Image (cartoon, rainbow, N blue to C red; front, side, top):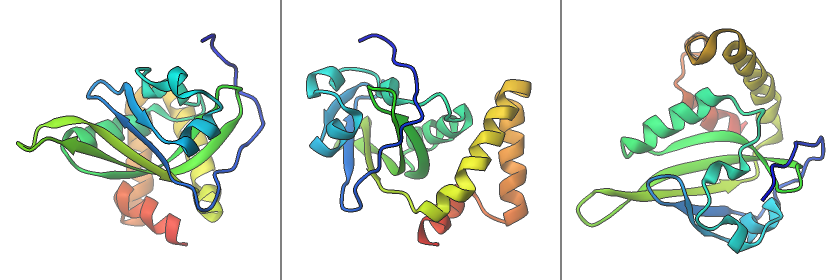
Length: 170
């Protein structure tokens, strides 16, 4: 598949839809449900065995994915707002819950993500925050972006999980 450029066309996740995917421990897609396939505008064959970041939008701050990977590799779940890109370049926002999939011995065998429509009021806060995080990444790298995010959360007296969950319930 050739690299698609982002467009300004937004797709909406249906209010009753759950976008589900599973990956192996390297982040390669091993399962995806029909609502996920449809919003991405792909076929199952175009998604399976591909890195999940095939749908990553360039507007997403890398620090959010760093937090995400740190949490799930410790077998902790995380909730995050994510802007993804469909195969035609359009984008869609989701409120994602990502967890590790464990075998009977508690070993991580992959990751499981369930995404749903984000609260539009939450995006009013998330969009400018992510723009600022991207700006910090461009000027000072991940360290500056992380420092800004920590200061932002400290001012609110919340960690990232509390912050995102509160926004989804606003």
